[in-house]
Amino acid sequence: MSDDLGLNRLDRWVRATLPVLSIAFLVLVSVTPIPLPILATVAPAFPLMGIYCWVVLRPDLTPLAAVFALGLLQDMLTGFPLGVHALIYLVAHPVLLAQRRFFVRHSFLSFWWGFALLAPSASFLTWVLLSVLRGALFPPFGVLAGLVASILAFPVIAWLLTRLRTALPATSDAYA
Amino acid sequence: MKNSGTIASLALPLKAWAPRFGFILLTLTAFVLMLLSKAETVVLERARGQVVDAVAPVLDVLSRPAATIQGGIDHVNGLFLLHAENTRLRAENEKLLRWQALAQNLQSENATLRAELGYVSDQQPRFITARVVADTGGSFVQSVLINAGTDQNVRRGQAAMSQEGIAGRVANVGARSSRLLLLTDLNSRVPVIVEGTGSRGILAGNNGPRPMLQYLPANTPVSAGDRVVTSGDGGVFPPGLPVGVVSQSGAAGIQVEPIVDYTRMGVVRVLDFGPAGMLPLPEEQALR
Image (cartoon, rainbow over all chains, first blue to last red; front, side, top):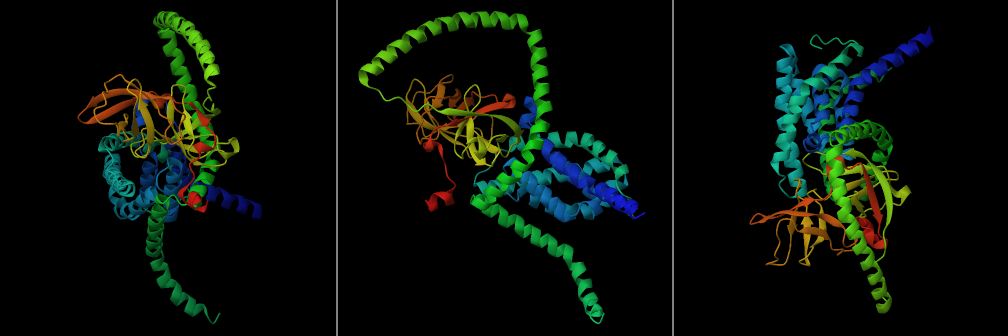
């Protein structure tokens, strides 16, 4: 009986970490070399898509500290100054929490629209932070191209992530 | 039991404040990390190296399907282009055979002349070959991770080559992985020489596909198509390695097309160019 309870608890715990694990996986995917010249120069922000989806859909399983740690992991792997992605995800977290009901209430389009608002803000903040840290303005072309790629790729990633929702533990949240 | 009332009265406001406090604390941490990381703090760089080391095996596995797909695409392309490729290779082979004959003549002549002069030859660099396991791509940082680190004798500052030419230099090392800063990164500076003119300059990355050639002596005649090779100044890069070709020379500056195709760079060779290749962290330098 107690064994059953232990297994249940483990099962529940594993399911509850799926959102964070899936974002961590997207961080790894975002640095995987892709042998297509187009994708090598415009890198879609896969981790940001994960953060957006899960903070909007399941904020109970995507706490602030987790989002910070994921940003730090991304900084370490991409060679960014430490703290840049961490700060962007930190700032995005409360904003998404405040607006999440609007993004999930209507349709997929409003969900997509939410990301289309978040992505440029995040890119702009990255651009400002890095330009200040490096003391030089970054050429904006690549940033814009990456932004367009991110917004276009979002439905695919969102579809994949929402497949995971059935595996997550239940929530009391009416909109989840 | 007696204290439970006090704890509850303390815990309630704490619970309400915890998220806000957490947000402020983490935001401050992020800013402190940015400043420390700008100063290239040894502790942070080491921590970064350790995290990358830990993740590198996973990245290695993830990058293999991509490499296989690349191989498959090349294979299919090769089948379609077989005839044209064959013709091209025959022509090239003929040309190369003539060069080979010339090279052999020059080699023997060179050997004779060196023997007569008692010439001390350049140090021949050794190689460490590694696979590219992650490509951070994108518009802000141009770097790749390779699966070799201090365990394989990779050190910070060493030059890295693809099969075509100079790709970049080692910016961070872990025990089993390291990061290469590519020529195209905004922070990349490589001392180069324009072949034929003998003029020395610096190839500065701009995060775009074509880095700029700077600090050339005034009135250096540079035109599109000129080859750019490492000058060896500073001792980080061995001299004479191919870097790129001048693609545009005008009022906006001199653009250089790197000889390395970064989208297809699967394997790199890190040059073990003696102790001169080392580029210690600023703090380590101060300790010496």
